[in-house]
Image 1 (cartoon, rainbow, N blue to C red):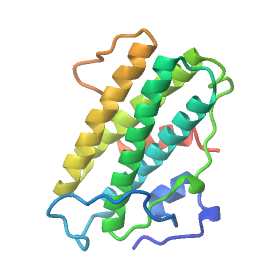
Image 2 (cartoon, rainbow, N blue to C red; image 1 turned 180 degrees about the vertical axis):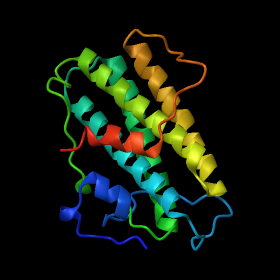
Image 3 (cartoon, rainbow, N blue to C red; image 1 turned 30 degrees about the vertical axis):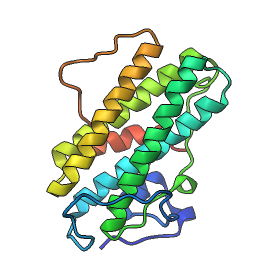
Length: 202
C-alpha cells in the first residue's frame, strides 16, 4: 500500500515511489471512459503515472522560465505559450488519472528543479534545453505506453505522447533543425526516465 508523507520530506524519487500530498486539480477533466474510480491499478502503473506527472511539472517549470527570460522571439514565444498550455492540460489529465486511482497528485510546490548554468541565457540555449526535455517527455510517455498494465490508461497516455512529438518538432523548427525525427522514436523505461528527471532536481 502506497503511503503519503509530508511534502517537505520527499525528494522527487520518493514522490515517484510513494505518492505525495498535493493540491486539488486545477481543471475538471474525466478519467478514461468506462474506467471506474475504484478500479484496481497496479503499483507499477501508479509509479509510471507519478513519473509522468513529475515530467509534466518539469516541462511547466521550463516553459515558465523560458517565457520570463526575455530571450525568445515573438514566434518562439507563441510556440512556447501553446506548449505550456498543452502541458497544463497533460498535467491535469494525468493528475485526474491518479486521483481516480485514489492517489493525491504532486504539484509544483512539491519539487524544486535546477538547470545547467546558462540554460536561459539565450534563445539558442533555451531551445536546446527545451529539445532535451521534450525528448525526455516523449520517451517517458512511449515507455509508459509499452509498460502500462491497465488498458484504459494506454489511450490517454498515447494521446499525450503524440502531442509531445508535436512539441519536439516545433522546437526543432524554431532551432532550425529537421522537424521530422527518426521513424521509430526511442522510448524510455521508467528507471531511465526517472534517472533523467533526477538530473533536473535540486
